[in-house]
Length: 239
Image 1 (cartoon, one colour):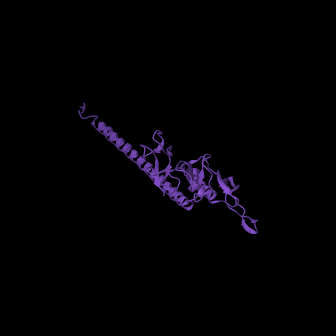
Image 2 (spheres, rainbow, N blue to C red):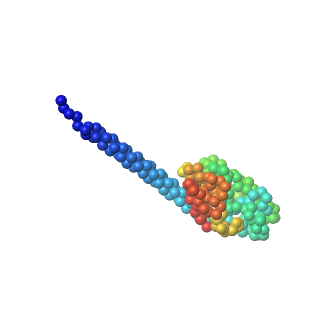
Image 3 (spheres, helix red, strand yellow):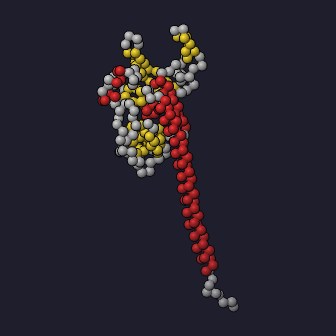
């Protein structure tokens, strides 16, 4: 009769231990792969955000005189007009660059712009115009002309304010297509004046809000510009 060896079963235990170690290694490698994919996606979104910021900054620089007011601010024709220059600091605080107003609003494809028009007799009239980036409506793109005072002019003529609103809508649409939200705020530490503000463009994604807020946990950063833990956003100075 063959005598059983005391070493029986040791080989099976060694295989089980090896499988366990291999499983731990594979799980660690899988976690590393997921982390690498997440970092790649984050890098891609950041690159898209920087492109949007660069385009928006160029648009902001193209329309330095385009400003809108809220209902309680005194009327003015432009920020270079005497009416605007004579506004008090409190009244100027109610005035906002057109592009900032459009980007921070809920407007997507269309937005209504109000501005004051002064005739040759000094009479001021508030003009409301809906600007669109759709193929129909007032999109500031003309394929036809009108004759005004013996002059041929584009049929869809737009003011600087309206052109600024249209270009802002175009940037906003570009960001929406990439699942990125955009907001514009006065940079932390900058004086809140209506002229030559130091403006910051905030781009956010993955449920982060493009705002500076101390109490909102989903905000990109605090009012002082400190990024919140876990936020997915970028804050870029424009001018």
